[in-house]
Image (cartoon, rainbow, N blue to C red; front, side, top):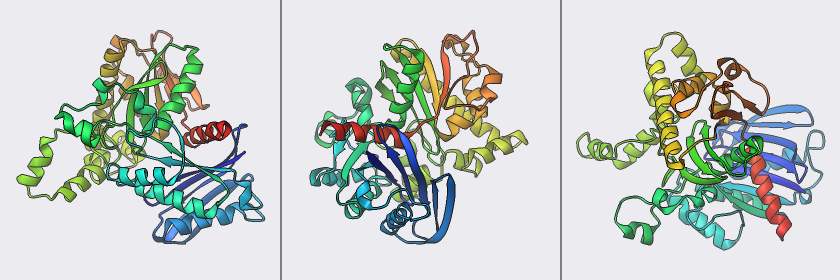
Length: 396
């Protein structure tokens, strides 16, 4: 079965064509800077990497470009559109309506649109990708995989806010959690590696967006992102946890509008706000060269993560492994060392040599004396979406 995976962002479309159940990736790519005269399409297939720069004003044009290159007689992966059996879509927010992968129906599309108020930076573009794919691949089955679905197992005591009950019952205001496909994928890999059906694992997804999840026996038990994907850890441009009184101070005392505060906390804060840089590689390089702001930002980032590790170890009453994943988690030995230093009280002891090594999609970087396994596992959200899409199609 050929499954096309689409991840439609605000100005990008990531895609992979995966053969299931063999899990063979036929091709992959990304359309970036949609809306620009110099948008780029990067395509990897047939042992080649192609890059095109073009004017791509809309997501529809972007997906049409993807289809064109998939059908390209020289470098493409398919001969006609009917070879696409299913399209799996990443959808960020499914509220409390979806605890598993589902077929795309008019009702599902309506709810994705309604949940756009909870994820205004993501859901509208996810929905647009679905609508365009329905036009371009009319015979393919359309499947929605929700980031929030994996976290529906978080108990009420952990996901409910201490505000009047009617906001929970009438409006669904609660902590939902995100990056679910990534946390699910790496936690299952970790459980297979540990050879434990009963386990207590903390998965740490570190990219431009960051989150941390406590998992008991493979199920999400607590998570750092909440009602929207802005809480918790320090991120590339998002502040993570703050005192909510700050918002009122910015508006009532400093004269900011609510839109300006929203933009500040989501687009101008985090590592960008602390250092002036959003790329962690630049921040690490400047920190090594003595930049005090960058050094402090790395320490703050690690400190926040250490606090969550301590809290989650406590509520799970134990810990078998921590897992680093996503672009920063997989590649930044500097941040991993800052996080794992002085954690021996919890049984976490890093092996510095192993931490610096870069080999394989799963590696163990803890010292032999460490009671807790420290794992680096490459995430693959597209493959996880393909697996869930294939499972749903197989049930039909």
